[in-house]
Image (tube, rainbow, N blue to C red; front, side, top):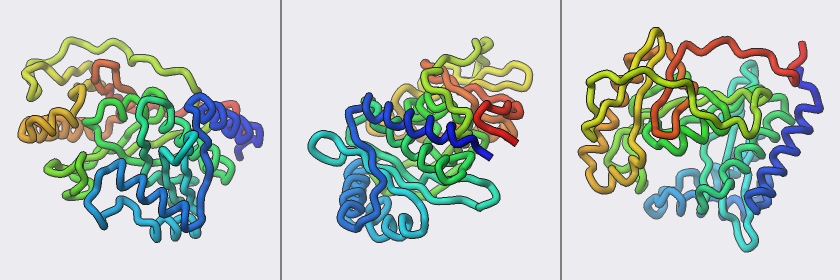
Length: 280
């Protein structure tokens, strides 16, 4: 069971993150605000008309079924949102379906994630699971380093073809993230241990991108794959296939961190240590 004080701390951490970002985060369930969430997500992903990532009626059903839709409000309007549903009850896991914000780099995404964590812990969840594009370095840093989650599973072309601005013309490979909620510690973002000398294999930019030592593997991703994709789709697809090859060959390893210069660190994930907030 989870100590009630851990849930209280989670809410205080969520409130602090929202305050630092200058937003107010609320759980929303009424149709009018869910329509606003659907429009915001469509704007963030720049999807074609009628192809919202999550339409308002789906969000309404999700909330009605016991899931959560969180919205982040700035001084004048909604600027971010997220949605989550429950996984199998025996897993005590929440599945985060989507999160997005008009403002990046200002802590809005962090505030949404901590609000989602507090909501999940209040209801007895132990973990939150979601997926992200392994080529987007800033998301990898956010997930693996800032939040302290791990990514034990790589799936090639997870969604199949996608038609939004960010994914069109690419293959939708994804890393699955698992975030142990009671183990989260804010402010611990650090680079992983030093990596060994890279192997001679070259990435599409002509630089090494793989290193190995014992059971561990390191794999580099580009600084801004979205810019690469916009300028040279063929080179972006080359990055996709190169990184996929490394991760698939490292099946059974877990991505536990990423360095600021874009090197994933994959290792056999150790058994999680008990945290003070978890009691028998």
